[in-house]
Length: 102
Image 1: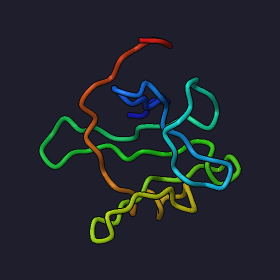
Image 2: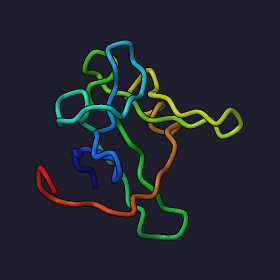
Image 3: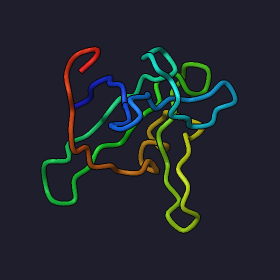
Image 4: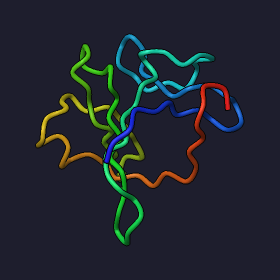
């Protein structure tokens, strides 16, 4: 199961996206192409989680969010292919709001 979504900070009300240089940023006041994410998976079962794809990464090819817990970093990977999907971090989504300005 997958869905294209925008990820917005609850306190800042700004959207998570990717800068022109490829860095993760949370500074956009409006939702646009750089703030499009795809959630892939099902977090309902034990050990479940969703992989998150930055749709516009890698010049529109997409890139999965990868985490390095030892370094405390999160980055957008360099590919959206099947091997990259297997390396993608799995995330738990606590709240999803429908609508443009909810």
